[in-house]
Image (cartoon, rainbow, N blue to C red; front, side, top):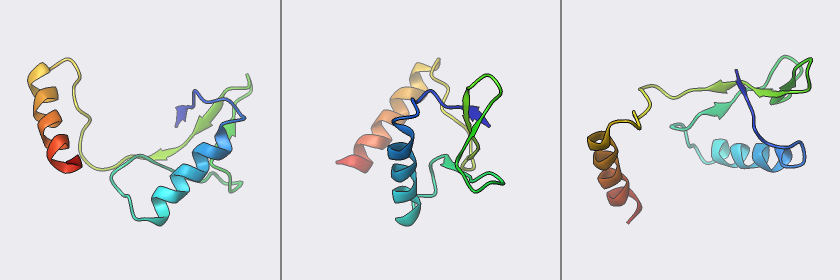
Length: 81
């Protein structure tokens, strides 16, 4: 579970975007998971907003390694262009 740094006004748009990705089969991004109440967000006692996400397999890129960042940049260029 991760704290969401989005205002409550923007949450419906964020949820709609994630649902769009789910409908079109994007499985390699961290997808939100509904809680027991059927909502995507949970409010903490202090008013913080949390979202449970299903992480894709693999590991995240280490941003402190320049060589790794450059390698992934080349991969993304091939994918996007």
